[in-house]
Image (cartoon, rainbow, N blue to C red):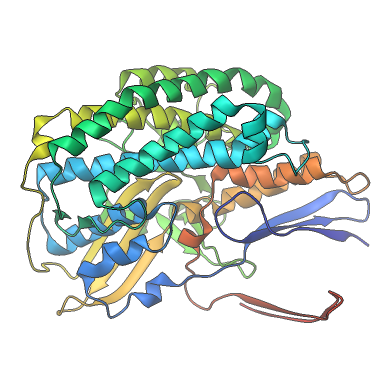
Length: 474
């Protein structure tokens, strides 16, 4: 008889999940699954609310990446209004979104994954955390804290508060930027750019120590999906969807937000509250794809900004064609931090950023609208339908972590098969199974929105921890 290894909870990620690893009678890994065990049904909660409340409501989905939901939601509402927002508002939204990229990537890299990368996958769990990082390399930890602080402070300067700012609204933003706040952000950029470059120079030689992990951490052919700007450039706020295969061939391009459903489908599995998105033309589950930093750097032709462009070119030298190992999500995040800081500097240097005209006003002109942008973890889609009174009738949210769900499951299996052996189970081996999930930086509070009948598992356990009964639905 085989046995089951349970990793519960998965640590150093946002949200609640577990991993089950099935061993056969020889102690070899037969299967492994990533289960998201929390559920938040925002699609149902918003029904009946006025559509103009949606950006503020959607920001409450997550305390880590509320700005991402503000952007996608506001763009969906712009489509309902059928307006073109003022140029200054467009630039201000971009700046806040880039600040979100900086703070979220810094959290993922320095707080959640750097303990593994600096101290080692086999280090004592009591030390393998941000405190251990501070003790071992305090300057690196301080750099990470400062980068995240800068991102959060920029969000606060623009939106009035660091978490759940209500500043982004349908039609633009609700307050212009003044010169003092602009100058405060600009003054901090030289320091943060230096920190980002210093971290890249520290990290790149370290990659050589993790060849085994690079080979096993979700290193397989898949599609890559993300937004690309008009010049084939890296873009977080606008652009159209591109789909690239594992050989670097573009198989679908210039997909507009309103057409996403022709290409992206969603499936529900009975063992998780997280939907599995897939590329419709290939079917389920063959249409597996990845989004986020790794995918974005694979599908673009340029980062546009000079420092990030140099680092992107070096990143692409890791492999002929698209970079396939999900271990390199960490590397890609650092390149994106550098890009975000450079791009913010360019946007803030434009005198038009101080324009007082930052919002377009209109009544609803469409009954349906889709907003699409890039969150730190990947492509984010908000799709809304309203009635004649502007009340929400229906919403569907496709979150980056849902896009990556099939790839995360395949990565968990690949990593477990490589490192887990039933006869000699070690903490380091199980940590590597968790670490492949951390590479994707999943945000589970954002992503647990299921369609149709909700899967449900109920276990009855006595005071000794013994399982007495179990029922499953879905």
